Image 1 (cartoon, helix red, strand yellow):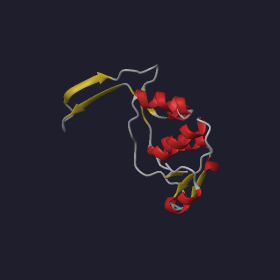
Image 2 (cartoon, rainbow, N blue to C red; image 1 turned 45 degrees about the horizontal axis):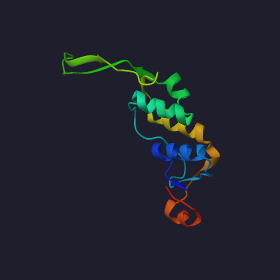
Image 3 (cartoon, helix red, strand yellow; image 1 turned 45 degrees about the vertical axis):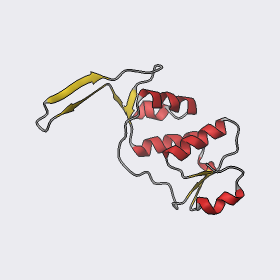
Image 4 (cartoon, one colour; image 1 turned 180 degrees about the horizontal axis):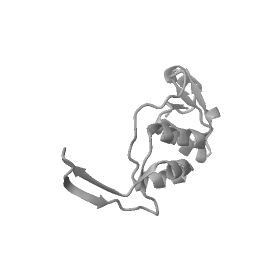
Length: 130
């Protein structure tokens, strides 16, 4: 049993499923709704998503991050732009939270997630709770 269908819960559930465990994710919310805006996925995170089988949509739909830096209010560079290094053939991406959550959900399978269930209540039914 994995409690919570956020990014960490879904990623954990995928890893457990790939390791041969029967996994169910319990989410307290009545339905899955991604909250938040974009987030940065650095190359090592993209490599991890590849291992989980959840990177294809990210790599196809999210904006790649080729360089980074910081600018002041007038747009003058304080430092950078600096190139972002790749890792194991992966680059960095800027997906929306909704895209990342959906990519993870697609990799896990919607049927493994039960919404509207309090994790604490269901804990007694599980052999192991994460």
